[in-house]
Image 1 (cartoon, rainbow, N blue to C red):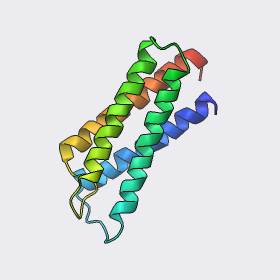
Image 2 (cartoon, rainbow, N blue to C red):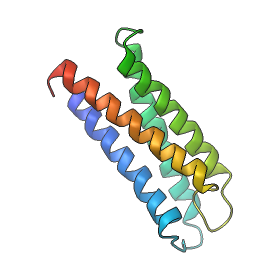
Image 3 (cartoon, rainbow, N blue to C red):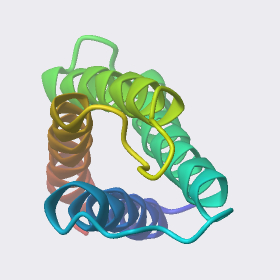
Length: 125
């Protein structure tokens, strides 16, 4: 998979995470019965995709390079926070804790931005 494809996949995953966070925590949408767990699973898959691509970017390059390392660490933190927020959610919400969900979105966003910056500088994308 090329760098451009990875950047697009990361961007789509980030949009999914941010979209559901805004709907659930900012707009406080009333979710239909039975729709919560499929949405939670989509969020967990998005977090795993971001963390996996960031980890692969770090492990495939120079281990001491700061940007891939930062992208990998913040993506893993974002994924862990997202998994915790989603799995501890009460009925009727996707994110259990607004603060934990916000940390997840910010960490995931930062990881994607840093990964994309590194990819553009090194690969001219």
